[in-house]
Length: 202
Image (cartoon, rainbow, N blue to C red):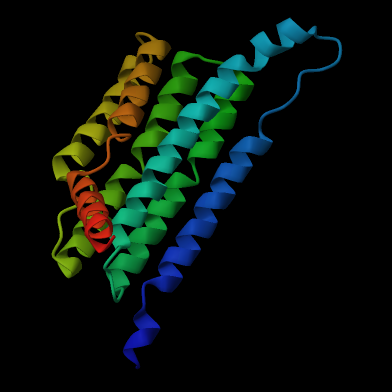
């Protein structure tokens, strides 16, 4: 079998497509209130779902950004990489379901516990995928394994805390989103080196 048949390009293209569909599905769940509801009342009615959608968008975006970092430099895929990538995408596809559940049933202990679980699920296959790819590329995971473990811990902790306060659980998930906005040190270093090269070339 020619080595180019095991190229990572198909994995990257397929993953990008699935993630784009996941985000599109979430957008379609944002419904305009009925005409009988006043404009301000309608905004107040849909605001919780919009905020949860924003949170969901960030969660999916975290995986898309770090997936891009992760497969950079990956020349060939393996059976394990393909299946762990599929498992990660499957778990990501559950986030729109949980988002719609919150939008339909409202912010309640059960709906936010379910939403927190949906956010936690992708983290497990992601760590497997990250370990397999980093083993082949001889690189450390984007953001480091400790950051990944801490994120999954916050997600899991948000599940029981939803029965104490749903808003505390949402805040914990929001903290994960904020933490991952900081670029990995490796990316910062590569950007700095690229800028230095461009400066010297001029």
